[in-house]
Image (cartoon, helix red, strand yellow):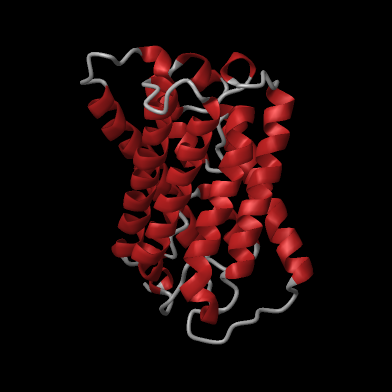
Length: 256
């Protein structure tokens, strides 16, 4: 396997965490959006959606821009990525998630206004939830949101001719997931995105991390089953056929 797709996945995940979790930290920790929770939710949702939209077009031709272990698992379950490629992608995504959180921590920690309770955009339930949802509620929410998100990616990338609009659809799907998910548990739908901030925040963010790793993976697996039901046969119309999110070129990640 070429190294470029692996590096692209690590870099993309790092940028997703840096910009997405960074906006959450500024909005809810530093309160740059004021005291309005709604403003913070919308701004953070926009940040996550927009950075993914940009990344799909930037690194989609290189790696497919999964930048999310749940997305990679969905593609693996749908037999649209090789197991060895999926393993390398997972490694790169978790490394990237940690690197993005480390960069964010280094910057905000330099502020005289920073304090550990700001959370670096970490996900959580119970006291960490805006609506006080419990672990079961957070788990269910993550399964549903990740299922929808990954299913949209699988569906919109099934044809190479969709490449020009795939980024928009995928970015809006992530934005939508965050609009409803942030008040519930902060919104993960991405184990790598949750791992990075939790490692630096520690405490309950780390002890509750299992929900935001397991639930998105469950949701991603379910999405592959539903995708297979609705699209039982591949509908490819070009080289690479949309084997990855945002593909606009042949399959570089599968090359040896």
